[in-house]
Image 1 (cartoon, rainbow, N blue to C red):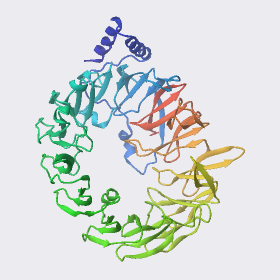
Image 2: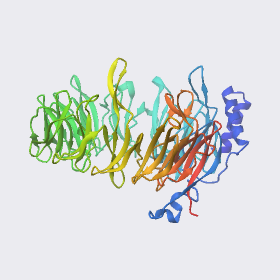
Image 3: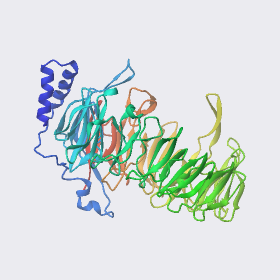
Image 4: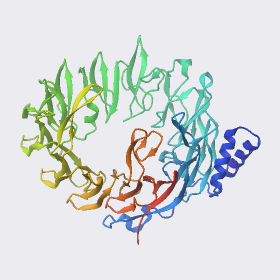
Length: 633
């Protein structure tokens, strides 16, 4: 169905007097057509990308060439709502307004525009799904649309891929899962977007699981077979297993495949037991386990008779089920040098050595808080004291006595540590966990690692005071006031403590957002580099985090002049809806060199992150787009 046909269809509904909603659809469509008509394309489902994108600029690939960016308004702010560009297209909406009585947003109607602002799908749909990379199939961008409560799939050129008759539609790579009807009459099917045919015809199963990968899908007959699931080959629809499996919940499907394994459950005897299957539907393990999780990096946890162990992708035991628990296992197995992890055996904690297959530290008087390489942070008592244990020698490098070591903050063997108690003599320094050497004295109110691209930094705080606060009757201590500075990874001060706040700007190599406060001028923010040089003047109300758009060699950060922190659920802000929000002022962007891409002194009331080379901008409560491009002049 072409776009002209869709528009004619909408007109027919109006003439026939279908509903006020149909009138609403046509009114919103016409309001935009008065500015930009519906775009007719002869393209046969080919993604029309712009001629000039960041990756098409010859100098862009040379990392030694400093880049400057310009922003050009392409789509004037005329929409009530927009979503980010993906694959050359963006969803736009008309009629979305805030309802004070209902305390909620009233949904509008939606259409689709291209990078030039052409309307490629009319603004008549109740919903248009996000345009993601997985919805490009055979060089065609597909979108899920909803019209009068029914869903289907169109190409961005208006071609009807699946008619708009389904209760629910979702896309997984080149497959579309559809459901038709509701309740006892519900049925599901699986449609191949490449071939244009149903792999699993609607009517054969009640539901298809959301986990579709490895050319496999889970299907069920629903209540007719007690919500038990079977595995289907998505290439031909062949059922590979009996329909006897389930997931963690009563009606949920088994898990997706990872490392060629999928966790499932089935009824054995009087109870439900866990096990693993391979992609051919064969049972890798016996279904004898009380519970299981994973796999992670080829290892899965299994629980048998209340004890935990590990199995590999062949179903063989790596560790037989003998432990009370295996804490934090998932965070360890992803590391390439994964060797040690904490376990509990008969109520006592120890450390398991994967390389030697034994408890290298069989017991200890304390709790293993974390492990870095061959060193473990041990806490004792009420967790107010800690020490560092060398796992290989089973000896303390740093004896129990420090109050705290930073969590996940190890850099080059160094970690922030603290002594004393909050609210009194609490002070922080830096220690080398390999030797126990004090690298930075215990004189700081706070210390935290900030990992950069080329080097690591520590942000420190001095001159702060501990304040006793309460929340719902509970008392706690929090630091107030003070000044912030920056150390390098050796503990040398490179930026003195002269700022009222410092935040490392992730995504840059050495930029920091800094804050200065004074009674006369209030709080102002700017950007400095690791040498303390001012990159962006300290005159802004807010400097946000860097984000890295796809296809760009640089990152961008939002800046604002004139905003205020207010409580207002009905006002849209850069930080979202509801709660304390940054409202008002003028917004812009800077790049990682501190260059202004969109100056905050321009007319935009709100600017959203760059996506697909385009940034959404708001002016006078309406939304449009600017194109962000490298300046090659």
